[in-house]
Amino acid sequence: MPDFQRSWVWEEERIMSLIASVSRGFPMGALMSLKSKIDTGVVFAYRPIEGTPVVAQTKPEQLLLDGQQRMTSLYQSCMRRQVVSTITAKKRLIKRWFYIDMMKAMNSEADRESAIFAVPEDRKLKENFDKDIVLNLSSPELEYEQLMYPLNQAFSTDPWMQGFWNYWNTKGESGKIEVFFRFKNEVLNSFSEYQVPVIALGADTSHEAVCLVFEKVNTGGKSLDAFELLTAMYAAQGHKLRDDWLGDEKADNPDRRLGIQKRLANYGRAAGQVQGVLANVASTDFLQAIALLHTKELRLAAIADPSKKESDWPAVRATRQSLLDLPLAAYKKYSNAVQFGFERAAKFLRQQQIHRVGDLPYQTQLVPLAAIFAEIGDKAEHATNNDKIARWYWCGVFGELYGSTVESRFSKDILEMPVWLDGGAEPSTVADGVLRAERLLTMRSRLSAAYKGLQALLLRQGAIDFRSGQTFDQTIFFDEGVDIHHIFPKDWCEKQSPKLPASLYDSVVNKTPLGYRTNRIIGGVAPSSYLEKLENGKAGPNGQIIEPPIEKAALATYLKSHCIPVPELYANDFDGFMKARQKLLLDLVARTTGNAVFANTEAVDEGDEIPASMAQDSGLELIEAD
Image (tube, rainbow, N blue to C red; front, top):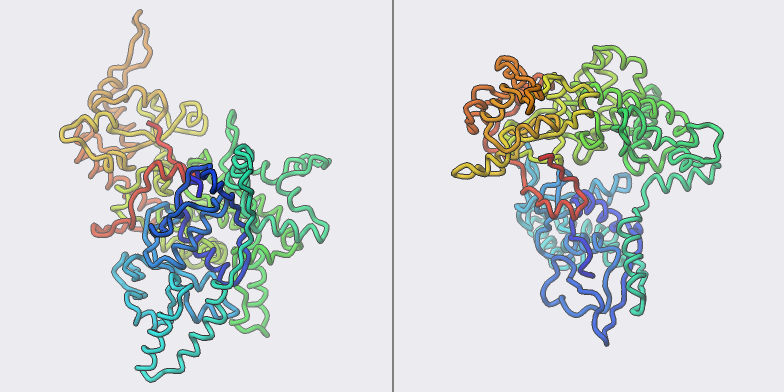
């Protein structure tokens, strides 16, 4: 590939989705290449596809302009015999082997994506904080026994097949080889027979043209999603879905001219702000909320039909397929209600002190939140219901439940939450929303939903600005430029002997929301020094008061509103501060979620922090206010 290509950073979920498409022979889009000028030398600097052996790294005949992510994903997961380095939905670096469940893959009623899965480097899937092994594939014999095929042998099936046959023949079940042959014919052959169209640009293509094409296919362009496909299907029925979402300039109705996307992005935004908290709601998010309500309606109708068996009840879904199956009539039926649901969600988020789209813990959680508000309507105005929804929301944030495989969580939410609001059983998300105590020390950036959630929670409980003594309502929040800042300043931490580790002083335990001017007063000095400055105030050259003095007792109250241990801060006791504040923050989370915090000193998050340079290459957001 040309050396200006970005590094390979696909998430494991996207890799599995791609594998599922190839295994069914579905098109994955064309590749685009540029023929090299072999006689006169390669015009662009180049590097090999990531993970290829040295023997393959020869002078290229073609450079891959578009399709690097797909080709690297398929090569590493389906051909290379080494573990794949990828990232989780939480943007953590991990290593994975990819497998396909043979029996699920041959079940025509099952979603193919459900048959594709990944396991850690030791090939063991674990639960209960890694205490229980639920699937062990650490040897070929265990793969044979459980009919789990390693996908990195998709193009070289004979050795595994021979071992499979020997294993079952020894056990007296030679008939199992027929299962493998059926699996090979129905699934594995799709890999070796798969055809990919390639658009090949000629060697004489100008540099300007190559740069323009690369920009279009890698930055300006986007993959074909369910919204695009649904737009085409609805157009055949005379409905312009794109005009609904993006607006119709020729429409007489002003809302129709603006479009749903802009109406949501503008809804509830603060004065002077360009966007509201719904600015990043995607067309597929909107359709998913509608799909949840539509498929729930179908399921409830089936349950009420005495002629229907439980096995015939349709599932509540918000998957890609459910969007493609969404009838135009269902879209029209629920569109207005879902728009109301998203608008009500924005109001709810402001009540939770989440004012900017960048401070939103989970974009994904907006989907079930909007669907719930769309269904319950005016019930959302009652304080008891609003409190329950708030508890559900924060359980989702601090349990970190909306990072991956979220569709099944959405389905549970839309089924269980309305029942709970009417006095029924507690929903799964509330029961599952447990924060691990040691997790606080590993939250260091806005890539973590719980990191952002904790700052909002401090504002929600009435955090007071150190300098002004004001709580951060929406006006103060924007006027004072509130953001997340260090309590023990970074400069001070780095000047200590021995130097304090960044992994500690950058953690959320040492951060809190503060106004811009307050953070300027804090600067890079010891806490005792900036606290003294706040107590003494500041006078101008003519004796006029610039910053009035703050009584020590009042300042202590301000600090406590941030869950800050006051004696430790005045004493510059970093270690004592970190231990005491961690406990105070955990108590705040426990009170909010209604769930006891799980303390496990042995469990740690899998993988390493993604380096800032890699996160930037991936288009990830890394924002630090200091």
